[in-house]
Each structure stands twice: as C-alpha cells, then as structure tokens.
Image (tube, rainbow, N blue to C red; front, side, top):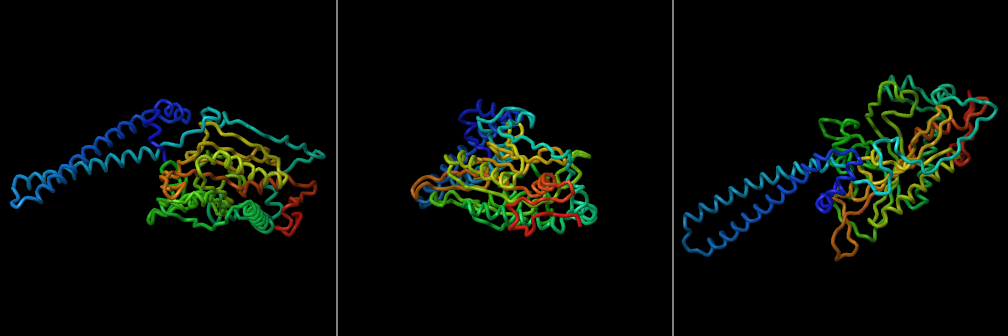
Length: 422
C-alpha cells in the first residue's frame, strides 16, 4: 500500500513521481484532505475519552452521584460514538483512496507515458535464417506435429483456451520440472500453493481494486482464481512479524494462472501467446529493505540464465514509469525472439515491490528481538512463463524437414531429443 508518510514528508517530490505514472493529482489532494480530517477526529475523540475517564474517576469517588454528572457522562458517551463513527467513515474513505495509488517508481528508471519509453538494456543479435528456410509460426507447427489442439480447446472452454497433447504436453512438464530443479539448486524452497484464494489475499497482493475486471472469481463465495503465484505467496506471512535471521525467504512455485484479459479485437488471438489459462514458475523473495536492489539484479540474472541454457535469443527491457506494474518500484522484462511469429515475447517480469505489498498484507520483521517492527521488501519474477517458452522453442529449433530439435539441457527431462512429424 502507498505509504502516506511519504506524502506528508515531501508532497512535491511524491506528486512529481506519481505524475510520471499518469496519476491524477486530485486523488492525492483528496488523500491529504482526508488525512488531515482523520487526525483532527482522532484528536477530538481522544480528548472526549480523556474527559470521560476523568469524570468517571471523579464520579467513582463520590458517595452521592449527582444527576448532572451522570447526564454529562451519557452526553460524552454519545459524542464519542458520533466521532468514532465519523472516524471510521473517514478511515475507510482514506484506505480506499490509498489502495488505488500505485507504488512510487524508482528514480533510476526511464520516465515516459507508455511502453514506447522502455529502455532496452541488452539484446542479442537475431540469428540469420539458414538455407532460406522460413520458420513456421507455432500455431501451424502445433497442428502439424499434433502438439496443440486449438479447436477442441475452444469446444471445451471457449476462445483463448487450448489443449496441449502428446509431446507438447510432455515438453511443458519437462520445462517446468527443469526450471523448478534449477531454482531449488539456487536456494529456493518449492511450495505448492492454492490456486483459489480469499478476496483479502487478492487485495493484499495489490491486485484489487485495480485489476478486478481482469480476474475470474466465484461471486457467491468471494473466492478468486489466482492470476499468478505471486498472489498467494505474498500473503503467506500476512499479519505476521518475522525475525530478520529468517531472511531472505526464497520461494518458488509452479501454478496455473488465470487471466480474463480483454485484448483488442483481433489482437494476439492466434496461438497460445495470450490465453486465459497458462502455467508459470514463479520466484519470490522476502528481504530486508537495504538488500532489495541487489536482490532484484540477482533474480534478473537467474531468469536470464534460463534463456541462455535453452539457447534462446533474448533481450532485457527496463520498464519506464508509465509501463510499470501497479505494485512495482522497478521492473525488468525478459523477452525471447520467436522467428516464426517474428516478434519478441515477454517470458518474465522481474520486479522489486519494495514495502508496497508488505504494507497491504501487513508483513513486518524485527532486526533484533528488541528493535521496532519494520515492513520488509518483496520481489517477484517469472522463472519462466511456459506457453511463450514453448512458442520460442517450437519456432526457433525447426528443421527443414519440419521436425523440432529439443534443447540439449532438456533431454534428461523430456526423454526425447526431437519432435518429429508422425
């Protein structure tokens, strides 16, 4: 959650940073007004309680209880209830506004209104095609090699669903197992988390209220299908105080992800690039604030190494202020080249959310048993998103005969080195 203390301390700097994220200043002015009103109401309510306590103490020492004082006590009680009600209303209004404000962007990222201002900080040269061979897009490959069934996926669930089958399904399972093993060897602990969570969990992770229309839920029970494993992992330690000696906490989880994204008509509708359900391996860390910047760089390296191991052509983008995710302070996107589709596909976003999520989910830690509690920092990254990695493999390693070579590092996991036309 947005830290209102930053607004109190340096309003002009905060406004400048949030304007770079396309936030309307009127929202911030409303927050400031409600904050002032809230503090006044707290002061009045505390004064009334103090007066009631003092009068109550005096009354208890009297043998005879004057009716005037009893009436005064009742009046004080009524006033306290009135101001408590006003305070609750003001608090709720303030919290609702604070929940709509995104994290402050890091000062070392590009300033710009949209993705056109993102900075490409590394890119590999796209390999030249051999023997004038034109790679097919994955939707053609998937059908020809009997790996993807689009028609029956739509029959089962509607548009933007598909069925992976045969060696397509095996390739996805092999990729997930390989990635999980790699991350476990890098010190991550594997978790299996629920795919359906409470509304408070969605709120704590920063998905609500902003992304309400992009998720699936059961309205009757107020349970939500997760858009990413980041959501349940963020809340594992909600309303808890951790010991610093337990940090960093490093978690990896594979889950399905459910997203009700409504892309423009005709945009990204072919293939498995943008779908309502997909598998992803997610990395997550809870760290001390002063270590989050170096942790972000370490997580980026971990995810790019996966692309290197698979021998995929990739590039890294540093996102600008206008393209930054709601909870993020700084984000790197990793994209792989898909020669059949002729486009770069995002396979990972690695983000430092600073204390934004820990404030929403109320996650704190103590540096020592006697020290004050502090909000820790959270980071997340896709390691990696499976459908687009599958796209890149199918399109990057085609042969002239239409077969697909499997990256060597996956052979122990797939049990096969090639996918052939049958």
